[in-house]
Structures are given as structure tokens and as C-alpha cells.
Length: 189
Image (tube, rainbow, N blue to C red):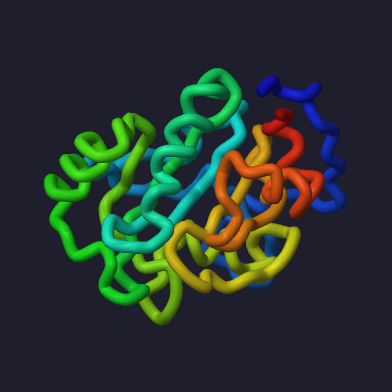
């Protein structure tokens, strides 16, 4: 597996600094998440790297994807940040506390990539990150809805949404490479 040459993405519009104006594209880097330890993590800390956001759950049929997410994180640590965002909205499959989630992920999958506090990925209390990821008015690319745990959103090194991948698309699978040319940017078997 090797990293392909850096892709060239064109920007057709300017990004507004106003995160809360739903009629204008906004900047991902204005958003902050909370780590499992409760510390605030500004996404601006990851400028210059690709980011793969994944809503995760410990009791889901897709939970073994943690292993491939860790492999992806390890393989591309200089170019990519994997961020797992625990979510209990789908079948109550992430009921644990922050400590339980951390322990489960480390013990069962040797996870060392960033995990956040539990988030809401859809509905009235949707986390601002997921509002940005799922609304074309904010991300400037496309709208989507989170269908289940382990849905993935890939953002480029300039904070632009590239694409999203449903849960069935495993992080390291050949299928993920064929699903969209954007994922080929990171993976090459």
C-alpha cells in the first residue's frame, strides 16, 4: 500500500468565516470537538492533513472496522488524521461512558487514533461538525444523511469535503477504492 501523488482539487467558491450562516459555505476549521478526556479539540489543529471522520459504536456489526481504521491511521499518519466520533443514535450501540469506550477500543482493536466524546450525528441536536458534513450549503459540495454507524466522511488537506462512504465500505477494502476516485487518493493496493 502506498500513497498516490497528492490530488489537485479545484475550488469554485470562497469559504466564509461564518460557521452559523446556513446560506453561505463555512469553514470546517472553525469547528471544535471534545475528546474523550473532555478537552476541546479545534479542527484547525489538523490543517494541512486529510481527515477521515467516522461515527463509531462498540456494539455494532461494523465495529471490527476499528482495526482497519487504525491500520489506515498508522499507514498514513503524516498525511491523514482519523477521527472516531462515538454515537449512540443507531440501535443504542454506543451506550458506554468515555472511559468504557476508550478501554474497549484500546483492548480490542489497539486503537490509538483520536476518539471524541459521544456526538449526535442527525436530528435537532446534531453536532455542528455533522451539520457541516451533511449540508451542501455549508460544505460546498453535497448534502447527505448519516444512515448508520461507521459512515465515513473524507476531507482534504484544505478542509474541503471530498466524499462520504456508507458503513458497508470498509476503510481498506478494494471496494472502497472503486466506490469513488476520491478514496483512491489515499489507498493503492
